Length: 508
Image 1: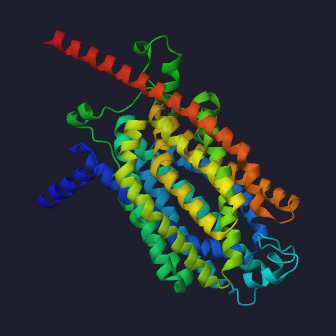
Image 2: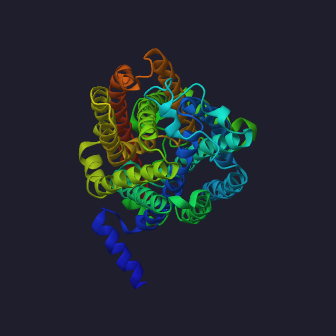
Image 3: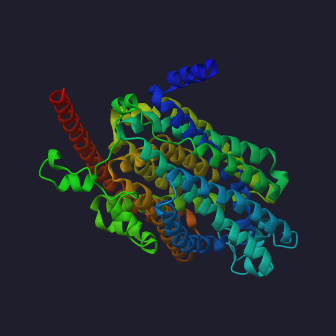
């Protein structure tokens, strides 16, 4: 018990938190720590496997991840819609599934041939047909057997799926137990757990790059730890917790349509209501898309994420191309990928522990989600003017620090003003499917620009400037809309609380 008090005191010195919020906060943060640790442990292995297939095939891999996502996202929505399965158990099931799948990936990787007989990336640079992106029409698939290609492609797609589905499902659970006010205070601490996971996973991967596929087994263990931690992400239903941090229960879109906040109906179609459970489970797969199309607010959120994914993918292609043509050995590339990730994680961690809560509380959601588009605009211009690995590294650092310190926590606040159905079903579809649609669109555009520009991919970033400008405008209007809906919710809750108090006085 004394240890628990000391832990609560330490957490309270870092973040403004009520006592009843600490258990869910610690479990949320630790869950993300294990997820991100697992992801960044295997990320260098994934990227190196993709490079061994040929850089010209990267856009194809991104398109492939879209098709896999179109299958996986509805399935995860269906799991959260099962009437006899609690949201907590559904989240544990998802994490454990990915844990077991990583063990399977290890067995397949070990069974596949090594790349010793493959054309190394250093050979690509000697090919006269190779452009700045390091890709050659003759290299890649033809240099390997079908089993080698299948394992590397499958692993690339699976890691991308793990990153999106596991993280999105966990965030859906967290924003269900936290509201807009508590999220503004606590999301920075939750994000710090994820960043610590990125730092730990990156450092571990860099130090043990020689282990190769055996890192998959360690990542599988980390995902099992994430499953155990997710069991503690629960609501505190004690009277004191409801008084300190009331939970949002109204449908923001319906309350906006009502003539006044007092007329807003608190009854929504949650997964536990007769409205949702009476529907055949097969239709639950399509619920996420239906909810998105029925809500102008969620459509605007989808547009924001899609534009962000397009810009993010441009940076990814630039980074991989530069590293592939600079570092010759596969172990060296894996180590460099891990070192970059760990370097970025240090700055993200410092920012999340010192700035995130203050920015979200003082500046608001609009400033938070507009920060990344503004930084991305400057990065696109910088890479076009100075196309070197140093510029790419600096731009990547600025982009990720801004995203995970400010914009990502602000983005999660966008979902604190929607119904429970929209949190679990629409959010997963937006985070996963819309993200992959943006990646696929960027992959296609990058491939076209690479061909049109004769391999001079550094100038391709200039063609993304219009997309970035649209992203900035979208972020501004979306942030303003979220703030309006949050005020409506607060007004409705005050009116509801006042009405209940009057009834209690009359009863006495």
